[in-house]
Image (cartoon, rainbow, N blue to C red):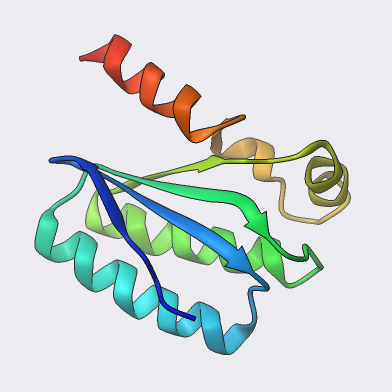
Length: 117
C-alpha cells in the first residue's frame, strides 16, 4: 500500500493509516514520512488511525517508534481517529497512547491548530 502524505497547511501533513500495520509496511511508511518531514520541515504530522484494520501488541510500539523519530526532526505527531474499540485495546498495551497528543478526529485536530494560530 502507498503512503499518502496529505499536506493541509504549510507545516502540517496528514497520514491516514488504512489496513494493517505490519513491520514491513511500517518500514516503508517510516522511510517516506521521515524523508518528507525532513524536506518540508513540517511542524506537525497527524497520524489518522480511523482506517487501521487491526491493533495488536506490535502496533503501539511501532507508533511510538515513529513518534520518537519525528521528534528528532522537530515534528510533533498527533493521533486522530481512535475509536472506543481501539482505545480499549491500546489501554491494555504496555505503551500508553494516551501519553501522545490525541483528538477524536482530523477535524478536531485542525480546529485546535486554527485556534492556536
